[in-house]
Image (cartoon, rainbow, N blue to C red; front, side, top):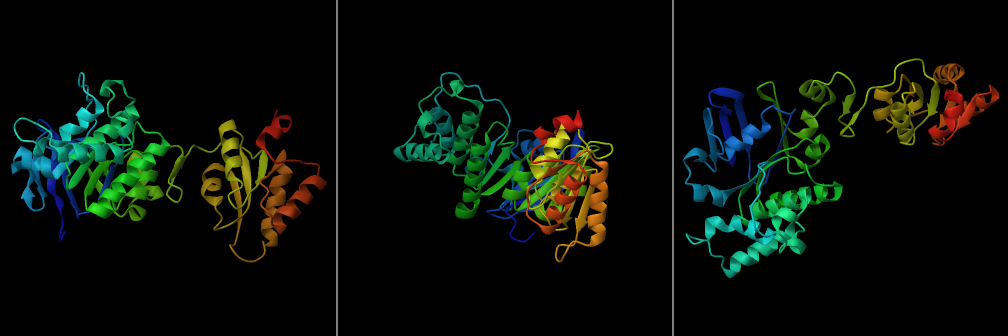
Amino acid sequence: MENAYLQLDDLTVGYGREAVVSHIRLALRRGEIASLVGPNGSGKSTILKTLTRRIPALSGKMTLAGADIASLPGRRLAEKMASVLTDRVTPELSTCFDIVSAGRYPYTGGFGLLTARDREVVNACLAMVNAASIADRDFASVSDGQRQRVLLARALAQEPEIVVLDEPTSFLDIRHKLELLEILRALARDRGVTVLMSLHELDLASKISDLVACVGQGRVLACGRPEEILTDDRVRALYGLERGSYNALLGSVELPRPAGEPRVFVLGGGGRGIRHYRALQKAGVPFAAGILPENDLDMAVALPLAETVITCPATGPVPPARLSDARALIDRAGAVLDGGFPSEARAALLRYAREHGKQVVADYTQLSEVLS
């Protein structure tokens, strides 16, 4: 790739003589964010450990701004690359400030003495990851999420051109996941820092990454823009999903649908049916859903979870045949669960259900008598 900052060229990684991932080709420009995704044990961490020289490459080449990574002096590499890997850091009698200060190693000389500017950088990095309030606390006493933020601050204190992270969101709650990803995006956008990381959360990978590489079966199976790479079929094949499904539109997984004759007909639409579909799935109650326009938000969840979905064109009136299909399902079901999305079809089907003695409820918990 022209203007590539980081380039992996026919790289093979592994342990001893045993290859884990072979013939890797990856190129990143300055300021790009790339995520490695794939099942546990596929080799994502091995790639990152090789790139950061924790383990040697078996073959191939890694270059940073045209320089061979394997040949760079350690201090020079530390000025360019920082990493936050999954190795457990257990220092004794070190404050969080001390841990972050270690990131200034490339600049402090042989005695490791911090200058005023070094301390300024350390404090700024702690503040950047919202860890300034724990700067004086013993690193061994803080939570896993706080440790992760302190280790990121240590990496940022190196003032690197590239940051390599292995599962950086693993111990973080939702708020701090979002904060961490926003920090990485700001680093890439505002400072031109290149970011390469492994992620388990496909929804986060799709939102933060310029490039996604799918690692599995001993190779990189696909690499490109997340909206092109993280398709339903590719994710299913990558992770070997035999039950349940992945939804690329929502970036979420759905558990397997309950099997059997639909016992409830859900009148959804406009996203209002989604909570009902998932409640019925959790309870193991087979259900049908409708009548949903083909572009309705409910479709993304109804299709994998409902036994039957009645659909209609996105524009225009509901065809009489679709109304007839829905009435037939209501006849067979024990009850109707009303999502409340206003439409002429919903009103007609509610009238039909009541006229034919079907219980109509607005919440799954009201179905207990019908389904007992």
